[in-house]
Amino acid sequence: MSISRRNCIVPPFILKRLIENGDEAIRESAIASLVSTAQLRGERAVRTSVSGLGAAPADGGRTIFDCAQGTVLSKATLVRSEADGPVGDASINHAFDGLGATRDFYRQVFQRNSLDDHGQRLDGYVHRGLRYNNAFWDGQEMVFGDGDGQIFTDFTGSVDVIAHELTHGVTQFTADLDYHTQSGALNESMSDVFGSMVKQWSLHQTAADADWLIGAEVFTPAIDADALRSMKAPGTAFDNNLLGKDPQPDHMNRYVDLPDTEDDDNGGVHINSGIPNKAFYLVATGIGGYSWEAAGHIWYESLKASSAKAQFQDFADTTYRTAGTLYGDGPEREAVRAAWSGVGIAVTPVDSPPPAADSPVSTLIKRVEDLSAQVVELTDAVRALAGHSG
Amino acid sequence: MKVTLAVRGGLAAAIGPRVRVISSDAEQDRELRRLVSAAAASSPDRGVDDRAGRDVMSYTVTVEDGGAVRQLRAADTTMSPAFAALLEWLEQH
Image (cartoon, rainbow over all chains, first blue to last red; front, top):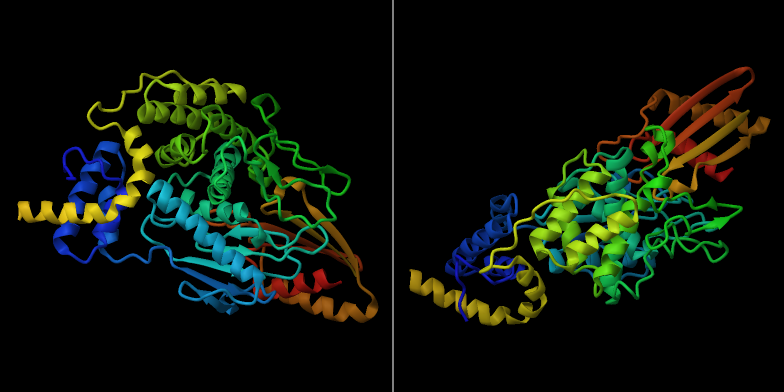
C-alpha cells in the first residue's frame, strides 16, 4: 500500500497520528500528505493545525475540579486528571467520562483535536453552587451544578448535556455564532445537534433508534418531563403545571419573536433553536443510518464555513451547498433540501461543483473508520515512501 | 425586609424565570443588610458577559427595606464573591 501526496486516500486523523510519530521522516511525509488532502477538501487553517501538531498539543487532556458547592472556580480542588482512575464521586467520574466521550467523538468522527483543534485541555468543574440548576460554558471551561434535588438533579448525569457545553467551545473556535436571536439560536442548536450525536455515537444508535432528547436525565423522578428539549418534536419535551409547556417551535411559522435582552433569553436562543434542531433530525432520519455520518459531516463542515452573524436562511443554504460539495447531487442533498422545507425554510438553489472524480471527498469520509485498522500498515508504507524520496 | 430573587437563563432557559420571595425576620435583617451592602459595593450591575459565557444564568435581587428599594444584578460568570455569598444566603432561606 502506498500514499500519494497528490491524491491522498489516507484519512487525516491517521495522518495526524503519523505526524505525532517520533520518526522525523514519517512526520514530514505525513505533514505533506495532510496538507495536500486538506487542500483538496478545502479546509481552512490547515497550516495552523499542522503547526499546532508540531508543538506537542495536549490532545484534550481532562482535568476535573470539585467546587464543593462554592461558586468561585479558582477555589475549586483538583480531583481527577487524565492519568487517574475513577474516584468515589459519581459526578466527578461522569464529568470525566463525558468529556472523554465528546473529545473522542470529535477526534474519531471529524478528526478534530479537542475544542480548538489544537489539543486544548478540557477542564470541568462539578458540584458548583448550592442547589444549582444548571451547566454552562464560561468561554474556557465547563461547569456543572448538582441540581436542587426537587426539580433538577446532577447535570453531569447526561452525556448530551456535557457534549452540549463542550460544543459551545467548538462553536467558539469556528463560526463563533453571535449569541443573540437567530445566530444565537443556531449556536444553541449546534450544541444540541452535536450533543445528541455524541450520545448516539456512544450508544451506537442509528438516527431511527435514537430518542433525540436533550437532558433526559437532568430531571428528578418526581418531575413529569421527558427532557429539556426534543429535537424530534420540539415543543413536546415537557408540559405540566410546574414547568409550563415547552415553548420550542418546530417550524418558522411558529418562530417566537422575543426582545434581544438578557431577560428574554437574548431573543429566544434556547427557544427558536427548535427549528434548526428539527431540521437536523429530519436530515439525519431522511438519509438514514448513523446521524454522525453524512448528516453530521454536512453540519460540521457547514459550522466551520459559517460566519458569526449567520441567520437560519444562511445556515440552511450553507448546509445545502455543503451537501452538494461532499456528496454531489444525490439523496443527501435532497434530504437537506426537504428537511429545511419541512421547517419552513426554502434553500437557495446553487450549482454545487461535484467532488473531483479522482478524489471524492465522500469516499474519504466513508472510509475513515475502515482505514483506522490499517495504521500499522500505513506507518510502514510512509516509512518506505520517505526512504524513496530521501 | 423583603427580598425577591429572580433567576433567568441557563441551559433550561426555555422553562422561564424562577422567582422566589424571601421575607426576613428582625433577627435575620442585620445579616441580610450586611450581605446586601457588601454585594452592592463589590458588584455593580454587570449583567451577563455575552462575549464568552453560554448557558449562563443571571440573577436579579430586589431588596425592599422600609421604604427603600434597591436592585442588584449579576451572572454566573460575573458575580463577585460578595454577591455569591448573598445568593447562597438567599438559597438557604
